Length: 215
Image 1 (cartoon, rainbow, N blue to C red):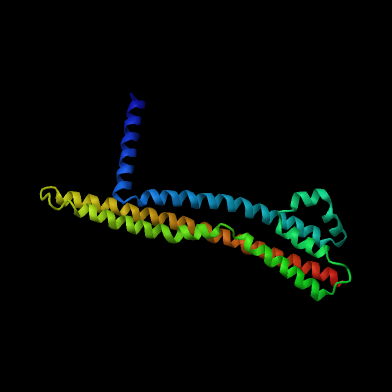
Image 2: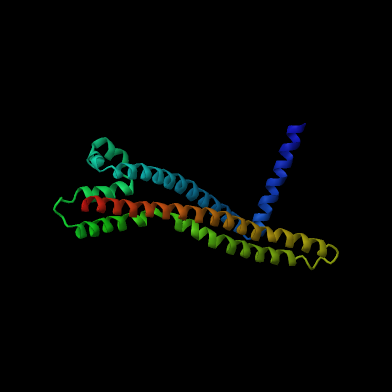
């Protein structure tokens, strides 16, 4: 009996959600897609950037010891770290002849670093788009819901209660859009902080290598 009651309640709630989505002109469906897009980007970028930052710290510890620079060319190490931007910058340095002037090496390292930076914030533009688009979709859905709410004014007896309930339902779209935008903005700024940290690591690696070359 309890299971049957829960199923009925779940069915009613599901039907209510679909009714709200339809009254919003379909914008709640679009916001659901935006939410899952944002969630996918957040999870993928968080794992990628945190692993990159940790691996970058390990590689910087190796670079601090000048005698261990040669070990970076080992096959096993290269296979493990070939996708790490720090490693590619170090390889750009190790591929330079010893007779290369410091100024030329600095230019080559800066070029290698510039190639890596745009790859760090890949996919973040999608999260930025969700942050901007979600509130606008929510507002659009609320406007459509308002039209539906005021369309019952012909029914004089029930108009007041229906309009009030319709307005309350219409505002759900705006609330959902703002919620998605706020969550997205928090993670967007957090991910950008890790991107800046990794860029700083790359700059530090470049300076460390130049200092060792000068020595």
